[in-house]
Length: 411
Image (tube, rainbow, N blue to C red; front, side, top):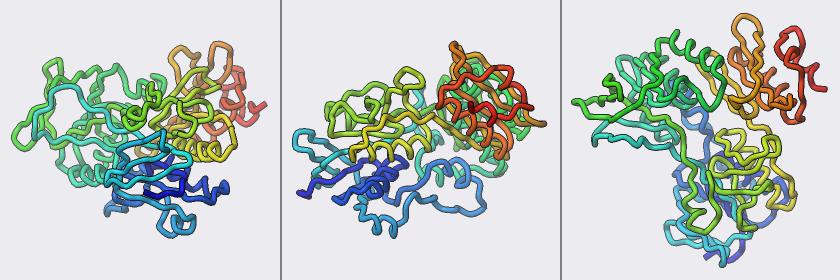
């Protein structure tokens, strides 16, 4: 066993890597150990559904940190290792190869995994989910001209893969159980714009489509819907959300509820153990409730914030949630958390750019989302994000008027 207590980070995605770097930049001089369960360097996940699938040649993973930077920061990276046990009394973790590591503080950034279908799936069905670089390579090999793809789930991942597949010449059908796309993420008018974009590109979209089972049909899969319709597919991509990886924390006796339960300082029910990223839920001042955010920027920012609090900063994590998704040549961005009960205000900018603002009952701006050209949408959503963070209550009439600059509302 390594006897010198270290800052040990379990999970080498965005949150874990950001935390490891932030610990060094924050002045920690003792050992830093970063443990990843994939046999490769930490990499970004957003390109997996985009560039990795559509580039002519495999561009390879986009690394979060290279070996030289790890060496420069003296971060000890354990690749291809799982942590099997946390001993909270002894302040140790046990790796899958039996090695024990002592920790001063432990940070759990274990992420999430794709949610599985609950309907019968016949053995041999050609199924896929997307979470890792290996997943992306497997999907990349299958999609192309003449390939028929059925995407189950009309959320961000499913739609991004649909866009990538159809751009490679595949025939794509998206089946969504809900009444519309992106039900939890954006308001209905914006979802309609996204749907139109996909249908213009040749993607078939079926909402209110419940999958009953998936059978094998020769070398293909047959997706049977509850209303009797069927779809044959060379590949069935399942994108119905993710499940936080809480098993390690749960086995250690940490409190779990829709993720590892944290306080506003990102501390678990054990004061020596912190968490960050997709695996955890935390109270958010702006929304007055506990939330769990599945987004790369939140993971990176929260990892860095957890590192700062481990070193004694004691700062509540209050960053405004922000999401982003490329859909063909346009971008979809969301700041804050959308709720159907909010008052919805629309702003049209030019020929195709659209913004939607969510006002709470007390008039505060609590969310904003946009769809259109990257430059315009990114700028407008950034102004909205600032307003949300400041808890401003702009007038609905001003938000709706494109002649009134968003920057002028930051007062």
